[in-house]
Image 1: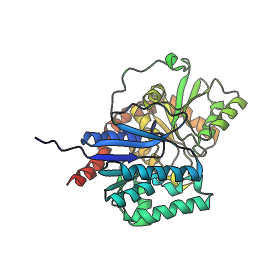
Image 2: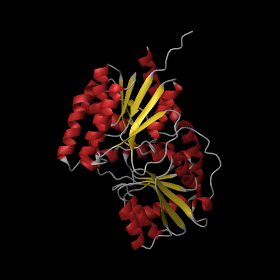
Image 3: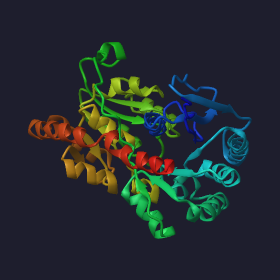
Length: 376
């Protein structure tokens, strides 16, 4: 009997693939549908090794930032998409959409678009009218013509609905439900065994994420260590400020690392911080991955009142909110979160329920439904 070949999906993203948990989960969900995957990204000088059960291609570029990077990447991506075996294109974020859209039109293949954020609202381009105008032009040209669009939360879906009168599917970036297994000890991770641990983590340790104020707050907290795991543009200033305040034993920086290794640190935390400021529309409606990572590690959350995060904290009663970003206020909220045993007992019970409800098995349903529809 002749066996039908697997349908092939090319999933493309502009990062180096190593720590993009959303794309990794999507690819695994598509493999579960018996689809063949090619994941395309780029290779950087410090890119970590990949070990995935599907094909990955990382392109080494001449340019790695600015307009020339986006131009080079989309041009090379376009030709790769145009001449590769493919049945479905899956584009992640606006910076891969143009190449995918052109290839899909020429090849007459379906295109799935997953926008991980309100791209034209990112703070990096708000003071660059020419750059923002180019991205807006691309989006306005292509977005209304798309049939299958995913995004990460209802607030961002509403922004696009208001702008383009299109209904987006929601697929939040929530971890796979899994047993984290036996963890490493504090000593094995290089953490002080005589201090309580609080943590923030992720690829977005950037300006206006509230981390600067959290570092300042550590002046007012005893016997507690603040662990910062990940990378971002504000790290050099943070490290300099830590030296100025003589907090080298209190604030520990850990660089970017694989997800499973990062979660070893998270499991030792007694509090996870997510303190984004409402300084731009993208942060206002953000729902960072780390919120769910904390939940799945059994860690209560101290958060700012950005819309989607506030809703999770209040709906599940799993932590505290800050009223402002004054370092002394953040310090007081941290102390309450660490020391109020009645609250901590309540949060512990509620986190168990949240873990049962907030996992990728629920989020992937809409993704699988769309791909099954493409089969018919």
